[in-house]
Each structure stands twice: as structure tokens, then as C-alpha cells.
Length: 340
Image 1 (cartoon, one colour):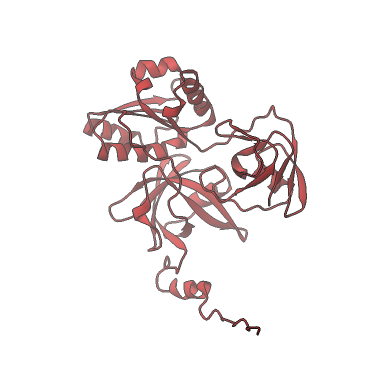
Image 2: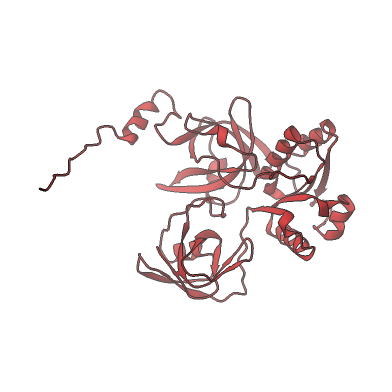
């Protein structure tokens, strides 16, 4: 005997509930995380701090210092996303992010007035302090200070061990707050290098000069590509890579690698890839799911059926069949087939 599938009508639609609810409270939503821009604070000419009031769907208790949120804005009818580190969380549950005026989403976000509503994600990412018996060394440049500033505050509130911060900055964003912390906490030493006044780059000699015992410390680094390459090289040469924790806000493509053919199996589409796989697919007219574009979230994760790719962040080569990769941080170094 055949049983007839029962039709279960969707009596209550989420979008309808959200539409009605926002008439009473602009950030209320059934499932989405909406946030209101409470304040806008210039950190420099092109660096803006936004304070957001998220709704009840935001899981504040899961947040760890160093994590980020995806912020969604609608531009030309298309939802665009970018990842921003949470700089700090207030006792009232307000979250602060800092946005550099560069790129489509960031330019749109910094132009929004106070009381505007944006959609955000839950806290995400694993650039967080690890339990360790070692003292910490923090290294930042440019807008990489956002996640590093959060890690610093977390250390000072929870740990009495020494912590040093090397901060390469052109505009001294957060310098006032950092100097105040160095006066308040004797275990914290700030090494602020204004790159507009002195052309100083990160070297092993500089590290040894400023933090004599840096090789015995756990290191956390976030910043521009040049600095990140330097810190990677230093720690690799010293065979200390296990003590180095990194987060990137710029992805650098290896321009020496040749263009490679890529096939998306399910879409039955082929294209040539020279940049990362996500950008190459988009340039070919495809629209794979994505989020942060920086390797933090897992939205663009997929199965590489065969072929070899290079991880743009770590330099690691993956030649295994049926392995998981992230399109946004993978560059093809051979013909590649992907199950998309």
C-alpha cells in the first residue's frame, strides 16, 4: 500500500515575520543577526571604527578575542560580504569593528550613517590565544591591529605573563589606547613604529633587539603581506613555525605560477585560473558560494576531486584526491577538478 505524502504548508514565513517585527524594533529578526550602527569613530583619515548593537540572535557567549564577523551589505540588489575582526565587546554587549576605506563592501559600510542596519554572522575564526606556558609576542601592521588589539586585551585581563606588541603603523590608530594600557599594565611593553616617519621593516635583528627572548614566546601576527612574509620567513629559518600563529587580511597571489585549467564538475564549466580559484571562477562568470574571501569562514569549502593547489596563506601544496579546500585561498598549480 502506498502512503500519500502529506503536504505541510509553511504557515509562517520567516521573511514576513521579520518584515512585521522590524516595524517595532529595527534589528529584531526571527533567525538573522541584524545589528544597528550605534556610533562611528574616525581612527584616521581612512580607518573607521563602528560600534554595533546586535540583536538577540548573536551568540555573545561563544565569542573569543581575535575572532571576526561577516558583515553583509546589499549593493545594487546583490548581497556582498566581508570579514572584520571584532576589536572589542562592551559590557553592554555592543561590538566594535574597524573598517579601512578600501574595496566595495568597506567603502559602502563606512558611508552608512548612524542607526543604519546591517546583517552580521556569528563570531568565527580560530585566531585566538592558545593555552601556553610561554609569554606572548604580538606583531601587527596596518589594519591587522584590530585582531591583535583584541588578543592583547584578552591577555592583559587573564594572564600576568609578559606580553610585547610590535606595531608598524602609518597612522597610529589605537596608539592612545595602547599607550594607556602600557602604563596600566607593567607586564605589557609597546613597541610602536611609525612607518611614515621611519622606514623600518620586520627583521630578525629588530626582533632580537626589541624582544630579546622572542624565540621562547608564542607569537601572533596579523598585517600587510610584506610583514607577514617576513615573519613567516624568520620563524621558518629558526624552525619555530609551531610557535607562530597568523591571520591575513591581504591575499598575495604567486605571479610566477602559470595559468591552469579548472573544471567544475556539477556546473559542467571549465575556466582558466591564474588568481585564487574563487576570483578566477567569478571572472569566468560563475558564482560559487563564498563569505570572508580570506580563509576565515568555511563558506567556499569544497571537494577537490583531483589536481594540485597551493595554499596562498601557508604555501602548502595539496595534491591529494578528494580533499577539502577553500576556493578563496587556493591557487591551482596543475589542472584541477572540483566537485561544484
